[in-house]
Image (cartoon, rainbow, N blue to C red; front, side, top):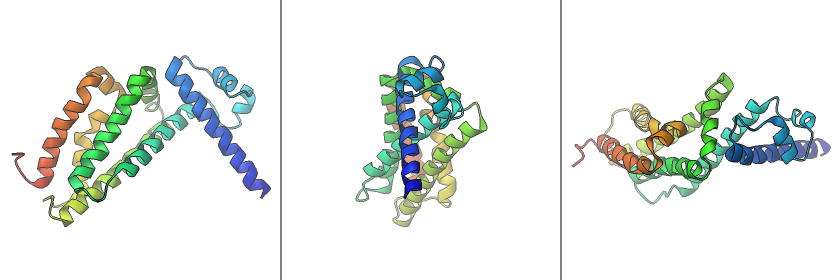
Length: 205
């Protein structure tokens, strides 16, 4: 019982560090936030903070991982099983991109995290886990669309990878920030029209 309480307390402290770090990174940027700033916001010493994270980069990885978890949960809650597989694919992708666009509008400096996360194998593992969950969801929806006659594709797993690659640009924060946030969702809609036409085996008419 004591061990469980200690573990829960440690988890709560880690969550607090991630929450405070998210706010600091959003306000000041990742590069201008240091361990001392985070420790002060959490009302703890820097030495105590190092008991939970070995460095600022590890905190950044946790912040990005938390964002992905929140995003995945948001998409799963919004998926309506009563609508078509195509509608759910469109929703899942559009909702994910809209979530990122909203974050960038509210806190443009958060884009620094998307650059930092690509610098290490550990960071790429965080991204890779999110991408894999995205691919699994797409594959399941395409398989359902094939089963009910919506889609005409021979290999749902390969089709899911094609949709994933076809929309990859829209999931890269620093890329869409440079592209122009007002242009992202209209351009995504056109891209999804083309990709979904391909899944249906039609010419898009």
